[in-house]
Image 1 (cartoon, helix red, strand yellow):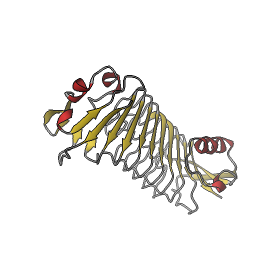
Image 2: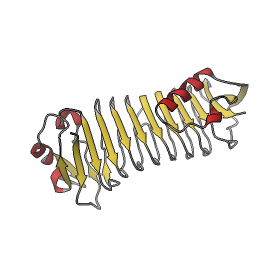
Image 3: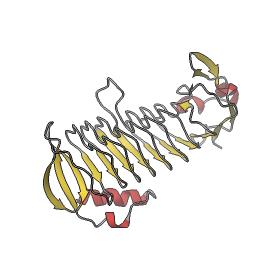
Image 4: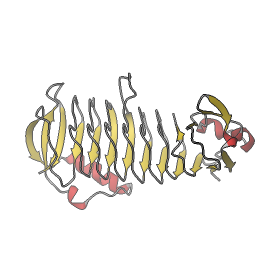
Length: 272
C-alpha cells in the first residue's frame, strides 16, 4: 500500500516539503512521517499540521500526494528511486535534482519542473510553467539526464543550459526553448515561441508542429532529411503512451545548424 499524503489544510504561504524524502519515509511509521518538519515561510512546522498521512512506502516505494498542491514546493527533490504520484496541480521545483525513479502528475506543474534533473522520468498530464529542466540561476548546467514528458504546454526557457536528457512537450511552448543548450534533446509538437535555440552549442531542438517557426539568423540551413534518431525517439514515446502525431514519424525535416555565435554544432529541426 502506498504512502498517501493528502492536504487537509490549505496554506496561503508556500509549503516546502523537500525534507519528505523517499529514502526516509520508506523506513518510517506514520507517526514519524507526520512529525517530519517542513518549511512554511520562515517557520518550521510538522507535516501533519497540513497533511493527513496513511499507508506506507516500505513495500512498494510509492508515495501519493493528493489535493490542491499549487502552494506545495519541492516534492520529489533529489528522488533516487521509487514512484511519486501527484493527484492534482503541484507547485514549483517538482523533481528538482532528481536522480532516478518516476514522478507522475495528474494536473499542472508550476515553474522549475525537473530543474537540474540528473535521471529518472517526470510525466505531467497537464501543463508546465517556465524553466522546465533548466539550470538554477548562477549554476553551470541544467538537466544532465533523464526525461521530462509534458502532455500540454510549457513556458519560457525550457531546457536552459541542459547538458543531456530529453524534454518533450505535446502542446505549445514559450520563448527561448533550448536556450544555451550544451547538449540533449528538446521536442515540441505544438507551436513554439520565439528565439528557440538561442546560444545553443550542441544538441537538438525539434520543432515538430505544423506551424512554420521563426529561425534565428544565426542558424544556417543544412539539408532536408528524415533523421533516424528522431524516429527512434518517437517510437519510444509511443511505447510510453505519449500522444505522438502519426505524420511526425514519416515526415521530412529541415535541419538548421547553430547557434553560429557559439560552437554552432547544435541543430533545429522543422517540418519540411
